[in-house]
Image (cartoon, rainbow, N blue to C red; front, side):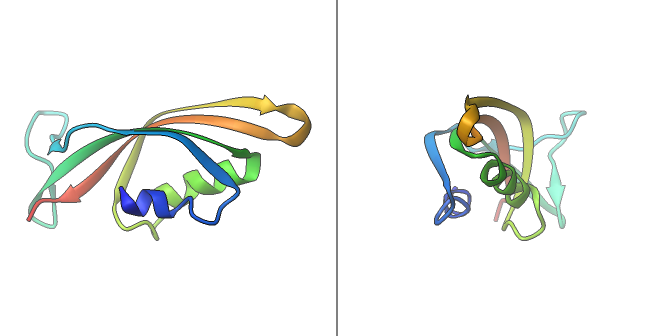
Length: 103
């Protein structure tokens, strides 16, 4: 979660709400444990709301799912709404899951 919040530091994007669920064992579509490099994964569901200019919101999402982010992230749902059309301000509500390897 700290890495997620660091993605916002210094950006022209403001998190207005962040909620994390309970860390749970990750399962594949058949219900079997999800493995990464031979180790079981844990899944942390997170929902967040962010506000910012269009390009800042898009860049934030790209950083989350990009190769440089220190974890595997899946986005289950994203909703973008125009907050201020004159200043290209958006509100983004995102539900995602962060996957980490269980040691």
